[in-house]
Length: 294
Image (cartoon, rainbow, N blue to C red):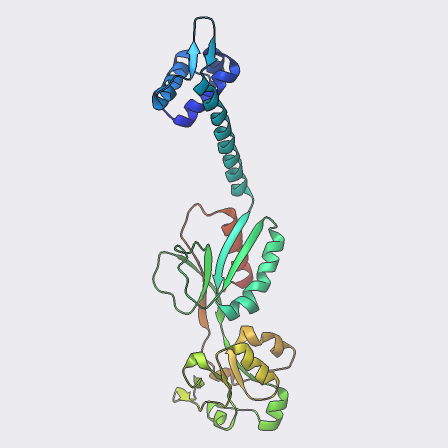
């Protein structure tokens, strides 16, 4: 017999005062009520009730077991109520991992709007270029830039991750505006060390394809540092559009060589395949796709 059902019936017997009254409450026979009580007593190897022809009373163990059953059944009811509420309203903690620059410049600002819309949801945002195992580290979702390996995760396309080449108006006035990749040999190209030891730029050349270019005198492993150098008029910066968009919009940086830039990298929102996704995850996915989807 189902242990929780037997516990519910036992509590009803104690509170109603008889097997017959408990039977009426559950719409079963008195004999079935007796079977549930005996099932519990067999499991526990002890008597819970002392029964005579006129009355019944709890044994000492039965009294303690009754109190524990009441607490357990109350906890079960509370858990069921919470589950029902979660199926109706997004609530709880979301754990999401996102690449650093995309996360700071694009994703985090959007998330403040999501959290405003759903006040019962909290967000733990991991900003890292490390590829995290979502299942092993208990993350709900991730944003991945670049080609995805085959996996069992759901992958939803977001807007491509484009690069832009820019310089300050002061630099271009002083050094001239490059028109082709070959012109960059005469310019200060700020090098990004994640592209290799020298941080050398590579753009799509004219008919011959990619053209390797000399490394600049200022190289760093952080795009923000390179952007600051470009804003100060030191040279040309090649970084993700997400990092440069505000300065371009304000005219503090001027795009160059757009026609020679490589196509944007694919970006995906990925999450485990689960037909019973919680409202918090469903609402999060819907928001991200509406705000950032391709």
